[in-house]
Image: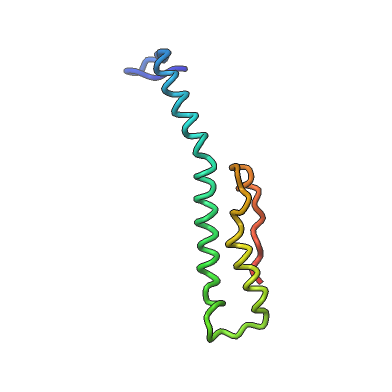
Length: 95
């Protein structure tokens, strides 16, 4: 591993390499949390966009389909334990 100092390529010390590896490990360990935050953000946007379907003065032809869609969105995070699980999520389709 190298770094650039005053325009010159310089090898990292063993301490700098250890520090860099620790930073990379910490970043990789947070991959699931970042993926879940992104998923929840998108899910919450979809829930907010369908909030109108739950108003008492809205008469829908397929009320149960909307309820199921919203339930599926709320349950989207169930059972996810890795960033790959999050990436493989199948999003429900709005009625």
